[in-house]
Length: 205
Image 1 (spheres, rainbow, N blue to C red):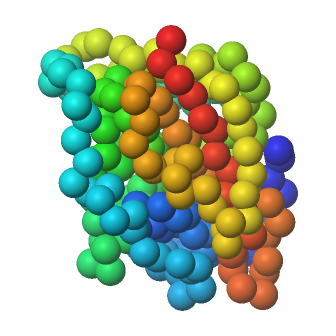
Image 2 (image 1 turned 60 degrees about the horizontal axis):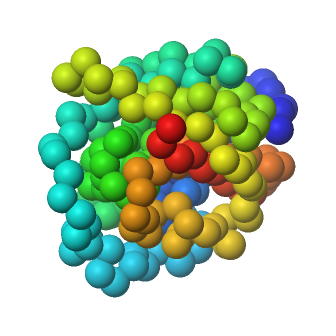
């Protein structure tokens, strides 16, 4: 799903969320917050923060790098926490992705979530080609201890922001899974937002 490049105030996908919802807005390359004023429901799942897997598994090192060979992604990963408004922080740079450090680490049981911008004022960003992913494409997450978690894409879907699938993206799963999230769909220059979110789902190989 190709994104159309624009000149001037090009969209910068902020992906703000309270454990469940991405929001896309305009900003420049130095903007680290890009907060939206038009986000739909911002209520987190009750019990999500207290969920603990009943399975025993060893400690998993934090992720430090993401590689997606089929779309030429090779980027460092920054840990994303909470912004002052309790939304998920956004990656500081358009060409770097970030992982939601409040959730599972890639390779742990549950859905690890990685966010990335689709573009910026200067052109395509790290997840510009996310819409080109196909089922079976390989996603590699390198970890701080030198190990690599390998995932295979299962589906790629686009959702209107008002219909973002919170359960599918953030709610606990019984196997190690991965979500890659960016902005997609038409860009509304009157609001400064992309209309949709693009989500790639992957399972550990």
